[in-house]
Length: 259
Image (cartoon, rainbow, N blue to C red; front, side):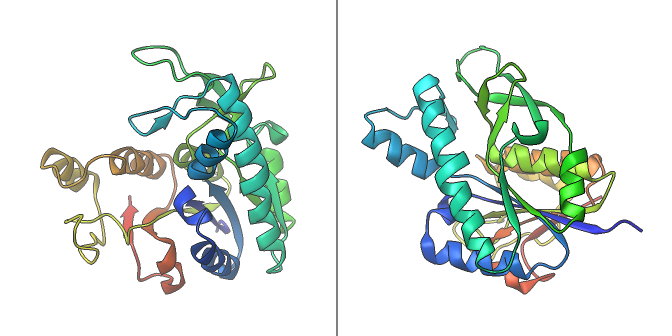
């Protein structure tokens, strides 16, 4: 029987709110067994870029990453946000290690091709190698992954944190019994976006397609769920989409996606 591994992705809105962040670190620290934290940090990157006189440009919720913005997101994601999380976990007795996809050659990406939009130095994941990372996890190390990958030619690439979490979970599914948790500001996938308590407790792929067609599920939730179903198809046991503030409820929270 495979050992359980929890891959938890937390969005920038939570890591940039101190009260929510402290609660998240408490709850994440309380998760028993092997675990990985994947984080965002876009709001911090936008604020620091503005102070440096660098304009942030977004298209369909995705950041245009030119060379100057790449420097900012590398500093913020790989430095400020990542190391604050590591320090917070260490203070709670969790032996955390901050990493990017370039470290240990974990995530190799290709620069996104220019189609209708030139996203600049944004990476689309090509290959994930968790062989060395699994050795560290088996020794009790808790990786904290920043949303940066590399192209194998010396360049870092800004890469969506949801995607990184999904790809990491899929890569580990051959070695561990993986549960992937996406934490954001809502309690789960909602039937009514104006009703916080209208959480869909269990979501199948057929229901998902119907809800998208009916306009119930829309916007940024669509790619998050697409990542979730791909993870399930690749061998991840369960995906949970929930609010970070509900993590302590253990099994009774959020929207669950299973095979």
